[in-house]
Length: 480
Image 1 (cartoon, rainbow, N blue to C red):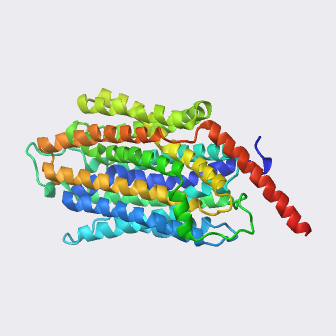
Image 2: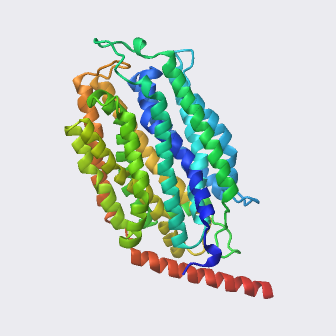
Image 3: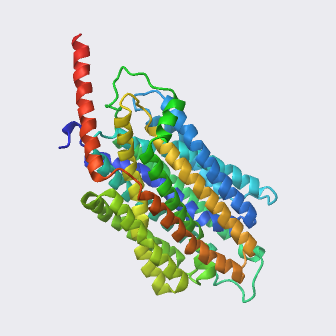
């Protein structure tokens, strides 16, 4: 039975979910378009582009545990411990995002420009995302309410991904069409026009405005609650000791390792999809609509996966949902035509939704399991969430950097209308075989994940007992 005091209103769930949308709007735009923007609009070479993407992702990964550390040291304010972080970083985040899509008037220092602003953007998005993701544990103590709020959040985040891809894709599509190319292969100088630079800036401005509006809505509609489980008189243990405890927690390591490989697979598909459609599948006229189809399918299927995990369990849902994408990505590689592309888009959306929903739905269960194993240790939620993001970001950064280097070694011609055969073959590998290998590895690790539905129910009941004991002790302390 849900404690009525812990029940979340529909308005609270929606406002919490809306807070996650802008991060995904911006992340969608960068995931699908930053690589081709750096290569064909900013006109830095593939090695420099790989350095920007890898170092930026790696830097973002490093900042996750750092931000997590400072959050654990933050004091509670009138608006909570996490809200001040999100509100404070948002204006600076919007500015850094805009300049990430600005082409400076000089050419010799563009690599430093994009590296600097991408690292700054990654730092600020970490300052927003780590406290936001940890906020799940401070909405309610009831697992069903948290799972419901997570489902709302994932629906809105996938919708944010859809909006980001729609805004970016529809505005900048004209910058990457091949129909204006002459019959011979041109150099980069003929392709990049002033319009191409301007449309990217317009898209960045629109997405920045969405970020500001959604953050304000979240602040007005969400109430942050303190951890009710640990004894109030217990002092918080040092960060390094808490870190060791978290890193020794088996379910956390298993879940993180499994979704690390799965996330890398999704990142490879996202970052190379536009290049694949443009140069390997002759779908440059359709790629923005194919991307939108994937995301619409993902938005629609989030409620399906929420029902599925409640009916059959989260681990089963993860296997069924994520396995689904493998045959369809390979189908697109071997049969790259428009009809197959849209069929693959609809089917892939189901797996994208599962890969987004399941890890964030399973992480609170891991935190509950840790709380039960360490009842006198409190306030470490940010460590769980920040290091999960750290590992997945770092792995994604390595994979993106390696994929760009592969394109460079294959002979990628920056800004050209057509690419040589080795580049086409490399793009097929990056879209098909490589993601499948990573997904299979991740699912094999997930077999070892120990928190079944029975274990999850047992943890819930035990934590409720701890909560009742703490309430009784608090009353006794008041009387004494």
